Image (tube, rainbow, N blue to C red; front, side, top):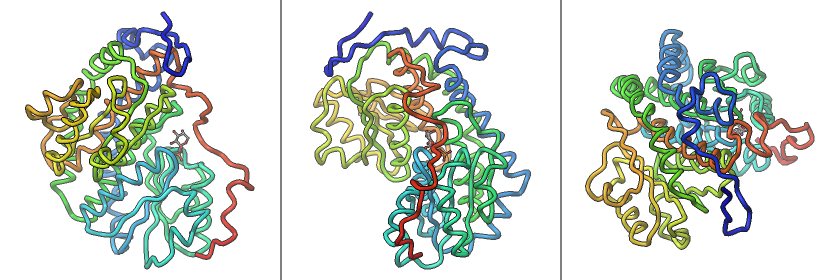
Length: 390
Ligand code: F1P
């Protein structure tokens, strides 16, 4: 059955739930690899955290770099959004100034990115360890004698040879083009580093503790999300999050865009009132990532959007009556411990929303249109700005 969209493009409609019922392990059908990678996250997180603890990697890196007064997290695409939530975590747990920046900004506007900065530690984030812009930044910093920390999921890649110290998470690497478990695992590793530097044993313990109970939640998610996708057809998607959740909101919007070629936007939740809420309608899905710290204020925006006739999806640790009333799809994480420790847990539902929306449109989320798994630029394009006065 084809469906006419407001912009006149017709769409083939496939049953998203068909993928859930088929055993993905043996299926090479569209989206199967990404579905396997999304569902593998709890086990992947446990493996990565165990590997890091048993190898003593984080303790070693904390010993070498905990003195750095300022941290600068650098990445591209999804890895830039890891940088945003990692920077928020580093500041919240250690009190140190931390910022996130796309690699291209540091290459093209170095004075903007680095001007006036005292001693700082750059953290270079790249799933592949091969992205040209990130490698260029690593070379630039190395040429300036600045120590760097790198994090990747692919052992033995160029980034590892260019940085002073590296965290590598082979268990989190993926076949798919889009980042799912690599995103959440690299974020969890950087959060664990911040917990180690700040000596927050409670945070480290809750990080380990959340991976088990979430298995049950993630196993039940495909049915719930695919059913919701079956019952709705949206023209636009908006993802809202505040504080450390803003990076997760950006990544959620990118997952919708990459896997379903939909228009996905992200805003700080309360910023949505200042203009963007003009697009609220029943065929706009507004996804709320509710924090504990800003819960009351964020729920007021949720209720406003519902009153304007918007369709809503909510991910929160625990909902109250207001949220239950205003959410068309409600995902409760129901975990204990500090809210920062459950940051990565907000993503699987969003990842599945992108996957099933793409399948419904007859797309293959494993191989998004126009995208390559690694962005390799010829030397010319990745040249640093002539003004690279670091
Ligand atoms: C970053 C990235 C991905 C994006 C696509 C292209 O790669 O931009 O976020 O989904 O796969 O590459 P990396 O530097 O983290 O390998």
